[in-house]
Image (cartoon, rainbow, N blue to C red; front, side, top):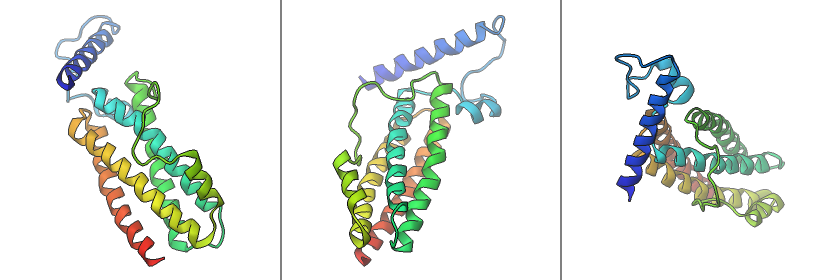
Length: 198
């Protein structure tokens, strides 16, 4: 099934690429829509060459990242917290905000919807009740809850990013996924250390 899906998306991508050529006033000899797309195209549309795994990765990671930013904002609105927790929350927000923008740009450029149709469960996502608990918590209790929730959240993101690394086609998306795995695995270790120190 996976092979069939990959083949059909590749065929669809090839058809879209050919359709793109015909609107330019005829075919261009030597035009290659594969790996050698222009660097300017790569910057704006992440190369334009993608598969279903790339689209799913971006569509799922956008709301996942958005929730991490929301959780960080909840912590940054509190006072009297450990400076390390505040630094962590600021760092998560600073890293994941721009990645949301980048992935949204890719999906738009790929002519893919920026959100998946229907409800898809994602590992590590917090429920509304979880977020309410985080909002209500104060002091060390808030710090412990934030770290516990964010560790689970990061573990879910790492799992999704590893799926993209193994199944994705777009070089920029795979590079971002590798970066997410590396940075979030480091943050998970740091958060576990902080949690044990509280």
